[in-house]
Image 1 (tube, one colour):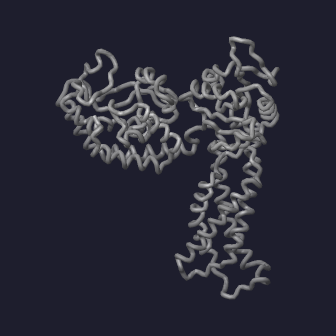
Image 2: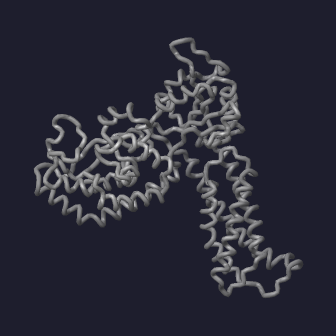
Length: 477
């Protein structure tokens, strides 16, 4: 299923960033005028003259990006749904306290001739707390207004029919500002028997929970809210299994207090606590960052490597009969198929008998093919796939549907690899997990680790490790 990005996922965080930046700059301006041009002077007289405001303006522009980064590390730019503004106030105070200490340290390090006032910095801290909180309050009100108008809401369905499921259903149907549109619920009973609707009698029944994967695509569901007894853990396991590879969030409403001690993250929505059992690997901003990174890096590398690619193209045509590129259908993000490009390294009739895994001493290589494979030079055209958008530079390696169908039932979480774009290189590959001599399950475990711990810094680390792996690995073939 192609996940549709909500307008609020981009708009609300962006407005919050702009509001915070404007509030911080305004706090600098306001604090300057309070200190030097108000009755504040009666209590704290100015003894060394009034400095030019230009110095404070320049300093504000220097520290604003750093303060915004501090806010981001505290996850203050995510969608807030129905968070109470005072809940954020304490996080804002903590972030600004760190920010103001950084600013004062920077003044000490710069040690310039400009006479910065310590009282101004105290006022900046106070005014920033007030102005940022006010700005966020109005953005939160705007966000709720959008949801009340059915703009940017998430389509959700409930699994379960107990008392908690009834509370979730009715509360979200009544409180549209929570940002959830409940389209119905699934039972956990066996449809072969007598299906009992329980506490949700009269609400929109979608069928047995085994229908969830099909309904996700049919109804455009973005979250599944789970409310079942803790003893039905086999239902959870089964639900995870049948939804492998599908980009959707699972949120669990626990019935028992002992479940609250779990290491799983708790998220409260409209007064109802949920355990986030499965979440999207990247939010919309992370996807934008990764896509921008892919476009810039792949464009630069294609430009730099173009002489090498031209040379390889000439050698491929001179040393073997057949096309320059080998185009092979692979499965990528959300199970979508695409044609992956490679320099041809095998004979034209290499798979006349059907799809085959490559082996170390494969006799299907062309004279140049084994060298291309050893140093991964046959993969260079995949930077074109990255530019097109059906691959990323870093991600799980794409596989053919034939092999996916033979491995998805025997390899745990195999389909989870399709929750992100496939890549030219990946965490498994840079750890030497390539070829038929390595464990497929271990490779998948490495891919899942990458998906759950993604960051741009992680991508950069993998790229540098790839260079080392290409030059020195004995596993490549």
